[in-house]
Amino acid sequence: CGVAQPMADLSLTKTVDNSTPNVGDPVTFTVTLNNAGPDDATGVAAGDPLPSGFTYVSDTPSQGTYNSGTGAWDVGAVANGGNATLAITATVNASGDYDNVAQVTASDLGDPDSTPNNNVPTEDDQDNATAAPPATDVHVENIVTGTENAPRGRKSGTATVTVFDDRGSPAVGYTVTGLFSGSISESASGITEPDGTVTLVTTGTTKSKNPTIDFCVSTIAGGLPYDKNDNVNPDYDCGGSGNPSSMHVESIATGQQGAGGGQKRGTATVTIFNDLESAVAGATVTGTFSGDLGGTATGTTGSDGTVVILTPGTKKGKVNVDFCVSDVVGTLPYNAGDNTPGTTCTALTKRGDLAQAVPETFALEQNYPNPFNPSTEIGFQLPEAEYVRLMVYDVMGREVARLVDRPLEAGVHRVTFEASALPSGTYVYRITTDSFVDTRRMVLVK
Image (cartoon, rainbow, N blue to C red; front, top):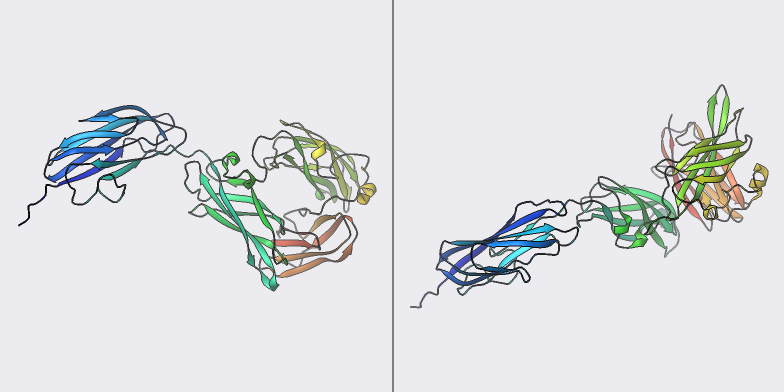
C-alpha cells in the first residue's frame, strides 16, 4: 500500500472596510488565510502587492512579516484548523488600479484543490477586493464609423460611440450629440445602452460607393459632466482638446414673429461658438437689422450659445430682414475674423447688397419659426450655381413636398413651406446638389 502524502487545504479571503471611498480616504484591506487540513502547513507565504490606486500607510499581520515594497507576506506555519490574518491600511489615490488581489504563493505541503502562485481567480487560495472612489465625469472611449445600405442603392452613415466614466465603467443612459461629416453632413443624437455604446445613423444618404464618414461628439448629457480632455482621442470631440481662447459668430438665421394687432417683428437667431466649436453662454450680442425693418438691438446667449434678437419696430404683413453682428462681449475675446462669412457688419448692410453677396460655403439653415403652424421659411446658401433639390419627408421617409427642383444661381435663397394640409409631427427637409447634401428636422404643431 502507498503512503498518504501530507496535505494542507489552504484558502484565502480578502475584504475591505470601505468599497466606495473618496480620494484621500484611508481604507483597510484584510486578508485571512485558513488551513482546513488535514495536516499542519509549513513554509506558507502569500502575496498582496498594493495596486497603483493606493499609497501604503501601515500593516498589521497576526503572524509573520509583510514587505510593503514587494507585497510578500511570509506567514510561516499554520496549524490544521488555524488561520492567519494580515491588515493593510492605505490611502486612495486620484487615479490608478483599485482592484487589490491576494493569493497563496507557497506551502511545503500539497493542496488538494489549488496550486500556489498560479494566479487562477477561481481557486480558493486567491481572492480580491475593490475600493474605487466614485466616478466624477464621463468621456468618449471610442468612435467607430461605417455605412449601412439605404433604399435605391444608396448608403447611410453610422457612428458607434462608446462612453465610459473616469473609473472605466460604461456610462449608461447618457445622451450623445454630435456631427457627421464627410460624404454626409448632419447632426445626430442618441442614448447610450448598458454597455455604454450608442449607434447613430444619418437620415441623409449618399450614392458614393466608397463614402467617407466621420463623426465627432459635441455634447454628452447625463448624470456626470462630460470632460472632453479625458477622451481617448482628442479628435473625438468636435472642438478638440484644450481651453478656448476666443469666440465668434457661428451662424445667423432671420425670420419673423407676430407682435399682436396684425403687426410683425423681424427676428435674428444668432449662435456664438468659441474657437473649439463649443457653445458660448452669457455673451451679449449687438447688431443691426436691415431690410423691411431696421435698427440696432442686443441680446444675451443661453446655454446653447444662441439668442433670439427682435427688431425694435413692427410692420403689417410679411417681414423680411437681415442681421449683422457689430460686437460680442463675454468672458472670451471676440474674434470677428473667425465669424462665418456674411455675419459681420460691414458696408453690406442693405438687403439688396446682402442678396448680391456670394457665400463662401454651402449651408442649409434651420427653418424659422420652429415649431411652426402652418408655414415656415427655409433658407440655404450656394457658393456657386447648382442644380438644387429641396425635399420634405415625414418620419417614415415618405416625400411630402418638393420645394425646389431646378438650377439656381449662387447666393442666399429662401423658400416657404406651407403645411396646412399635413398632420402635426416631425418632418425632415433635405437639400441635395452635386456638391452638397444636408438634412435638418422641423416640427409642425397644430
